[in-house]
Length: 401
Ligand SMILES: [Zn+2]
Ligand SMILES: [Zn+2]
Image (cartoon, rainbow, N blue to C red; front, side):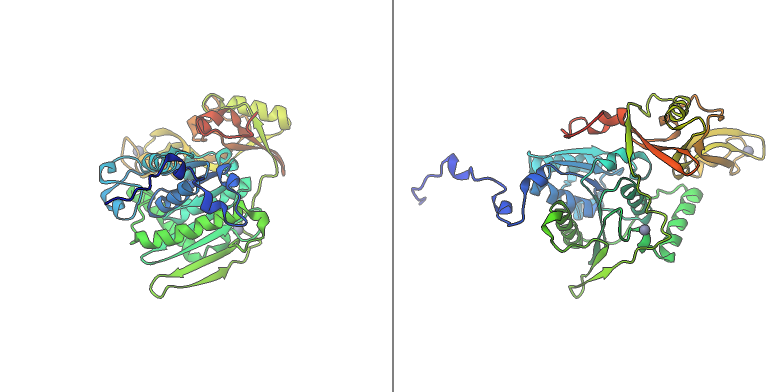
């Protein structure tokens, strides 16, 4: 027997965010208006994205360069068997919008270390990390400090994990927390990649969907507190939440800011220009910078770029790619098979012989920011004409030019 009470459509029309809005300090509009970058769509990333979608975060940018493998299915709430072989970022973005049609999620299948311009970071409310390696953390940390955007890191191993918050321009940053061991591991990975051509991101750490849920939950709660920063809620800024999954003990570590840390370099002003890395040549850039900053100005990039490789046998080969992207094959001599030497640059003064190349052709990503400098006087310019390439469809407000 069923009872006679009939439910009409009106009975379900309660605001879907009602139980959130009942939190005294909550402002759902801040969530709706936020733009959050999630770096990594693995075990932690899946949990981050799930939480962000449920909460109604207005815009999500999801970055991951890998495809889904079978072993991801045990730790990734957004992925199904049929998704194996598809890109993680794409599937995660689709599922997020399925969970909550109020939000827009956009996938970026690229390497965050080299292929995401600083102008993307600059427009984020908060950056959330779901990463498995120190090098990517270091890159995100530097990007966030340059453009003054808070970021929340998370890490898991077996049943344990930790979550921590970095708030530029002040306080301890990720690099401040790094030990000699961390640096050694980063350098090992770099030399490994050069020797074996192995993937940099081959983190095969044992993890569980339970520890990723706990840590991602803490990360998203910290993000909520950043969105409500004027509510004077306690937070993890410059601190680390350490969770022991065997005992279920947890404690907080407070980090010290290192005065000689290299990552506390915040750009005071970013000037938007109608330039695109796709079409602007290095010559045009140098000319523009000299016009803006002065005849003696040079252009500084935030990365070392390999130019030409030469071999003892006389062979030469053009690289023109950021050194991070080099691998054993790119520096192997096509004639004799020996390892070639290569030169690098990170500045241009207008005398170079490769100025016909575009910024994109030397590995500068869309919407990036470059420095025009005379001596110690620096100004920072953004390739703002690339805006649509990144933000089309994301319905951003208050931008641009
Ligand atoms: Zn630091
Ligand atoms: Zn050779």
